[in-house]
Length: 162
Length: 154
Image (cartoon, rainbow over all chains, first blue to last red; front, side, top):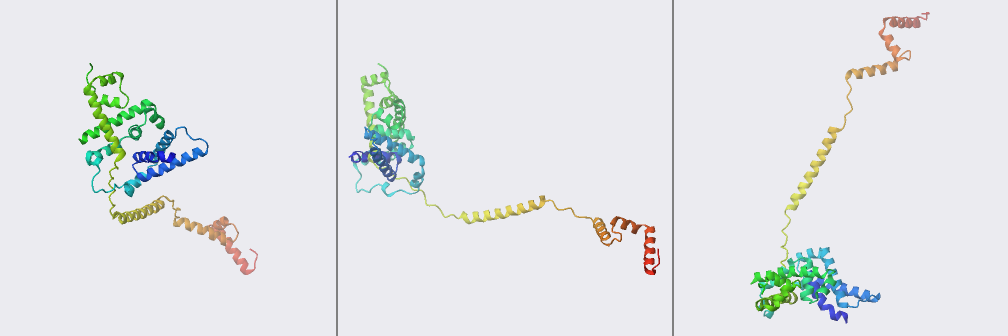
């Protein structure tokens, strides 16, 4: 039940933070394993969503810190990362445009790690500022400042693309 | 009425950092409200791209050229090792103290001492040597030899 409710969300979040589908899959499995352990030890959290998000963000942070996978990723592109070839472009791609999409992704990747996390949780996961602060172990003021810088940077990239 | 908000001020409002005055202006100004809506649309577009579209494939690292420099590097390393050994041996030889060589006179003196010790009649190399050098001793030795040969008392 918990897995069904949170699997897709966590996988998307981890993929966004790590930039690697295979790594994201590994991290999500690791997160659910920790959840299972916590439950079997009688330490099940009251709010599974917030708990899983916090553990996932920390796991992604650990992976990024380890850094080894990044070198592997730069050497070769995993087959899961390759976009599926479609006969016709998706409506969203037509509306946005390839160049804009690339610029947005590039701008996101150049954000500092903390700003990426804040933006992903606040705007993609649509969590409240207080939930983001709780998940990342930051004060709400710090979350807002990180978010402000991230928004300014990403909007700047979008303006440049126009 | 206060002047319209800057882009940074609008961004601050979207990041929940806007001041009371900025939010009040935004609520009252139609132009700023429209700009804020456009900004919200931009942010939603960015979020949608990051959420729904695959990340553009990063260009793979170019295939590495064959390492033509490898044999040269190995050769140079070997030459450097040989040079190092040679320098080590040469320096070692230069700094190692050689035993002082003896002068021929010293050798002769030592051999003379050895000879005197081995062939001394009195058993005292110093007295034997002195006896050989003194004429009186030579005469005494001659008399001793004579008496030995003739059987007479010296």
